[in-house]
Length: 77
Image (cartoon, rainbow, N blue to C red; front, side, top):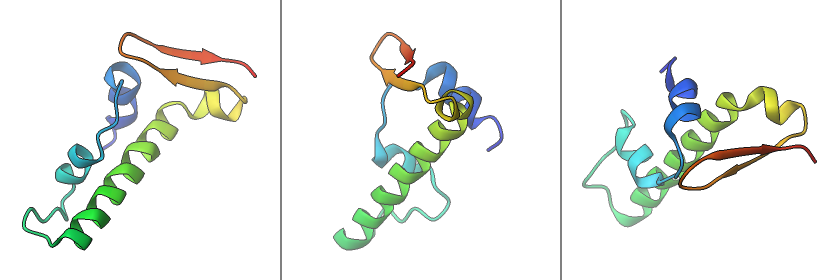
C-alpha cells in the first residue's frame, strides 16, 4: 500500500502485530498456534518495515524516533 508510510507517520502511535497480521492477505484465522505465531511475526515485520519507510530520512540522518500516545519525538544522537 503506497500510502502506508504517510499514514503511519501521521497516525501510528502503537504497534499491534496481531492487527498487522490480520490485515495481511495471507492471514489464516484458523491457523494452528505455530502458524499463528509466524503470522504475528510477519505482522511485526510489516509494521516495522512501514515505520522504517515512513521515517527513512530521519533514520538515515542518525536520528532516534520515540513514540508515545500523544506524539512522535525525533531526536539527534
